[in-house]
Image (cartoon, rainbow, N blue to C red; front, top):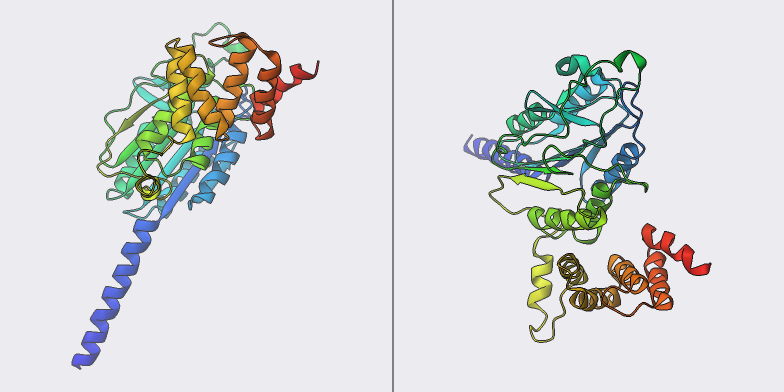
Length: 353
């Protein structure tokens, strides 16, 4: 009898341990991208952004629910599906690309057929989604990424022309994020995010680059670098920002990887990683310290950093901080383009004329 009781208790403990471990390792993401709006101006990139972001997150161990061009019912059902799959103690990530707006100091995410004159019933309230995530995953990490507020919302149908647009521009800051939550906004409060001229929005493009190349950075570090890249790419017109109440550090990959690498490299011969050098180049350029920017960009470019290679090309092309030299500019553009930098690919075309 004692043996059976011991076996029963051991089995219960084993199952409980498995359940706790599963929750801690659980990563679930809901990705929504809406492009094909009917009552508002259509957007080109959100479906691309959502599809590409889903692929990146799958590579980082997330179970991904991908939804595109969703109506009101579809979006609410997707949120319910997402919440059912969240495990308390795990990681929940919600990403939305599309139209968003503020109304009565709350933030709303627009389905493709949303009626702006019935906002509360027909749109998804971002504040409520985060609240539900926190309720279902109070011991875990909840990440909300809002790549919304793209362009001013216009009402294309003639019956709206004489009616004042009822929604506010951009998002308002949400109340302080619940403990264990991180909110990333593609642009500043009451401002607009760019949809972009490439396949992806500036914010989505740089976020995916950082997730692929530097997943070992903490959330704060990663999004700080995304913000710097977006500001640089948009010439200061778009300034991402975050709200965080994290009590523990989180990285999409092993946080200790870079620390171990740094410890194994003697301090006197260690070279800063290319991304760090690139960021220093951006900071120097933005403060018009062009010679210093050139120096940092060159160090990063020689280590294969494609954005630094492109920036060097621009500086040689325009003569900023260095003597103008189109041949050298084209050499850097070609190196960057060979690694897939779309801006460099476009710039390289002028080199063959």
